[in-house]
Length: 532
Image 1 (tube, rainbow, N blue to C red):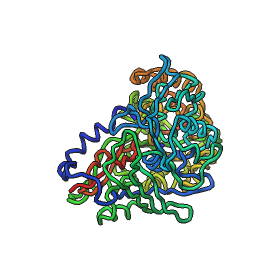
Image 2 (cartoon, rainbow, N blue to C red):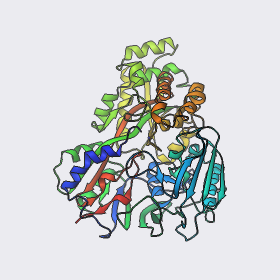
Image 3 (tube, one colour):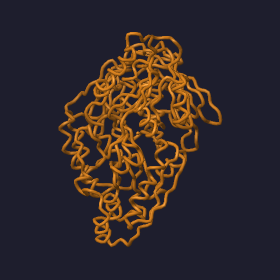
Image 4 (cartoon, helix red, strand yellow):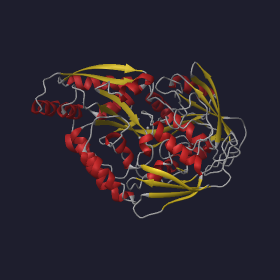
């Protein structure tokens, strides 16, 4: 799913004055009907994703937006900032100086939405279950460093880690560690369908048709005990096939707010429109887009091919021609604003140059033009994806060094086929699981990486990542990630393209929209209310 200094303080400073002009928070209150959020996300059952809302399987920001609202984790990200705060737990802390034992105490009296008591045994069950199921496209890699979970008391949970990991509190604040009811979920298999039995700030009601959610309603969970203070009683999610129809619904008043996914032309247009009804809120973000390589595929196995692509790609032109400058060129896996970011690809390759790329291919004994197929998903990262891949195709082919074909696939086929190594080069996006440079390195090139990439670098996996996780003060970890970024720029197992910004479009009478997204770009629907 794709961080740095804090995002939300920036959001608040940038957007709060706009919202004050629209009425501020003084008129906000509960009631007034459901807050309606529009989205182009699709929640559907497929052969490869039979349980869209099962925390053991879900690993996508759209689904995580639902899980954060309906399940509790021991910790969760706060309204703003990057340091997790207690949610199901009343307190958590390291029990040793090596960051290898983490202890949490649960709040007393916690209950699931079905009335069952939530105890330490449910926490242990949830973690053990996710690891036992080990769903290949799921978030289990975030839990892979756990050696065992102990429950010395009904409200006590102790995590024994295999190796030191200062990022562990961030990891158990994600839905990968969502707490499920041990009496409602099978410990050895995924739960089919869209059922949710959690203890989060909302309960979930869905209507489905042909294995797809057509309506989702979040009702405030009156039994919830945790860090969230809900500003509304009900949130409804409405689903749209495209961004254009979603925008039409916003302007007509059928929905109150939209975030996923605004197209670049919409952002550009809304920026320029003087509307008293709809406001566009903009802030820095940590979403990244990149090309991933199956480094075992004959087409790109030779490092020179990947390096030559890195030398040819013109990121500023891509941002201009395909995204109307609604994102920024990205020259490293770790985006701007995150501790340890540096422009490693720019430092190594400089400006785009077909001549330099020709020299790289010649030195690697690669004949030209190099035949390649670039694969992208047609229905997951927004309507500009196809246009951006046509721009990439043109850049590579115009160099005279490549003969590129394009292949578009629906996400339901794209994700499992990419993980199975069926594509030589394919486009992916990443929203951060948690706001730390570790989450922009380990998931891509570390052991058990979520891409299922065959690429390995022993220095990154065995030295830099482990050493960085011993640094409790994350600024001290920057030097390790800077080295890792330089290695990635040289070996190019992935090719970063752009860094996104955060956009929310909301109707004028909606309050709390400046807090709608947290530092991991996840929706916080409990912050929204209707003003007077």
